[in-house]
Length: 309
Image (cartoon, rainbow, N blue to C red; front, top):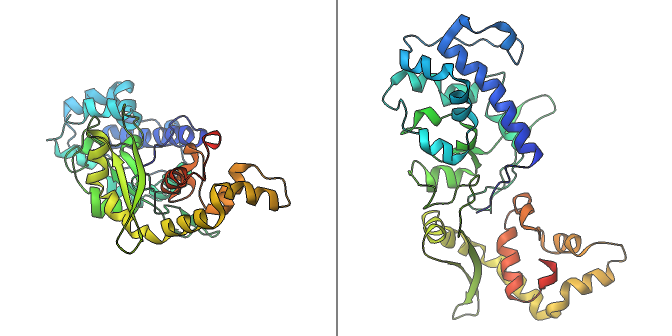
């Protein structure tokens, strides 16, 4: 599980663009032609007004702060308002997720490309890259998981911090519509106190490594168990076996040996990335799948030294 740094420039840029465009779309759906054309962020946007929008909803979104909180409020702010208007059928039409992902002016592909999160933040083992051809053909993108399920909280169906770029396995097969709480489960955009887990391994009867995950009770253990991380990572036995073979063959000084014989001036971080196909720095775990698993086990094996962390 990988945190997404909300202070990175690409995340800030994606968030503000999402707000600018979705603000116009939502206001048009509620107020129709009362919204001035000069508010249109992209030329030739056609958005139809929803019929029979309730008075309370109209008044609520007249307050710009309310609209901003719904669209780009942080996870704890979304948690405070998630149940608002849940029983109002027009809310599902105003915040219609399936219409948005197919909208030609701005949709899920645009958001995914701007976020640039190439590894699933839930499992940390699957690529979630966005691919659009030079001719503009949309080929593949990550799923967007609704951390607060849109089926239960339709108001948050298009909220920036409720759209988690994730692999299909985590979105559809594992998390699905589970209704988690911020103080009990991992949220990629919400750093929780005490959240920590570590990869390790045991050797089976045939001296083959079996991945295990060490996590304390509470949010860490809940998250690891409900995302079935230990069971899933057991399928990466071959990667761990390779790390053990390196340790046996080259000792703890493997990175130092590579650096001395590379013939070019590389930092230890660069040598590490080239040797293991993973990133050493925690803030770059999202750039390569399996980075956390490899770092934790290489640390246990003594190949990664304290001064490298």
